[in-house]
Amino acid sequence: MLSLSMGWRHLLFANYPVGPDVVDAHLPDALAVDTFDGDAWLSVVPFTNVDVRPRGLPASLGVDLPELNLRTYVTHDGEPGVYFFSLDAQGLLSVIGARLFHHLPYYYARVSLRGDGDGGVRFESHRLHPGERPVNYAATYRPDGPAFESTEKPLAAFLTERYRFYTQAADGSVRYANVGHEPWTLYPASVSTEENTLFEANGFAHPGDDPTYYYSPGVDVHASASERWTRRGSQTTVEERA
Image (cartoon, rainbow, N blue to C red; front, side, top):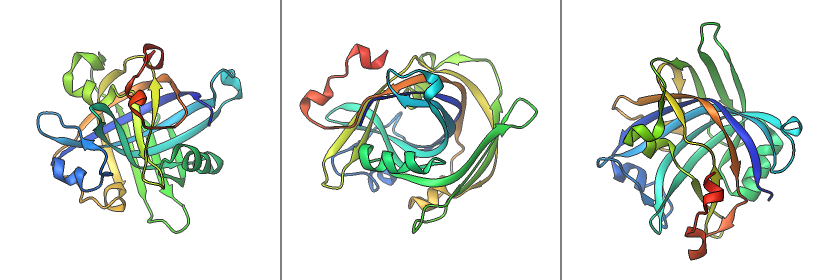
């Protein structure tokens, strides 16, 4: 699969601390839970992809794809990354392509993202993937405080400055893709969540602790093609992070 360019826009990072054993029970054996101050984290991330296209093509040829994901933070051979439990997205062909070529657990959903008329974002997602457990999510979120760079706060950097995601193919092999973008500009966020069944659909009890919320207007991103993990795969180049 070709490497891709896109923009990630209007993101909410809703981050829930949980025990490492809670996450570890749901990970492939080859991946290890990554923790911050002893906690593992589950993050609900609604946002929209904009101008998604093969790398090298102009943005005008790209497509927009709103998305909702549930993710955690892992290492493999000491290399940090993200592991996705589920990704719900609007584009049927994109869902099929991501499943086939990136081995990502994408699900077809009806997703909407729009302004709420008061400086916030209204996001709704309803999974329609045949044969899969339903997922419903509805929330309104907005920035609520001064902007800061993710690298200024250790927890924010841990949760957002990730330049790789890991997947497991049907044959059990670990695969990865590298992502590149500028450091995140974040804001504290206020969030009103009316419905969220992501945790239950992925086999988790809803976390009891209060989440840490961040909002970001977004970054421009490129993502490499999926590759089978080898020791060579542990070398992330400066170009991939830029």
